[in-house]
Length: 218
Image (cartoon, rainbow, N blue to C red):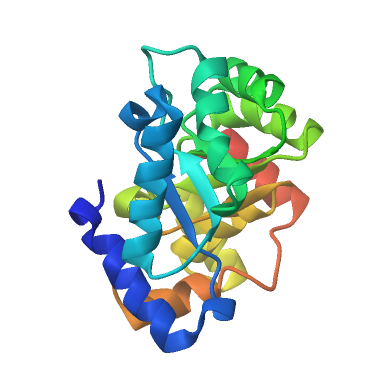
């Protein structure tokens, strides 16, 4: 899906440069591959070939296949763990009910990640239903689009809290997410300066009263 495979090829070049042990590799399988175990294996092996590695650290179902039961698609997907093509498996864009069924469906592997849209501006469903369930079942939420394509930068509440801490709105928006148990954020970056700004979101924590203020006002 990402650049018709060219994104994986680019990551493969980075891996060669920095060394396999320096990175944690995650990739995804499209839902139309989940109808058959052989298709899942074929797609995963093609991804690994583009990445230039023998196995990934984590492979996700990109989103549920609506034409299959969650149980059937997860059991087809689990084959990549059985064949040693990945250390861990997970899902993406699964709601609480789908995630529960996925957990019950696996036989040998464990569902360790659910990658979902989650940000300080898009948070209510995740925090009310999905996150408590993930914490209870030791599943990590990977928050994609955590900066809402720049919209967090102009949110008055985030700007106000950022000035209070001497941080940027980006740093506050990311720190808000990672201050929650079992949550990591995966922001996009296209420049070194932005990477450095993102790094500034770590190493400190918002105070509880400020987290609650953001929940009420952002």
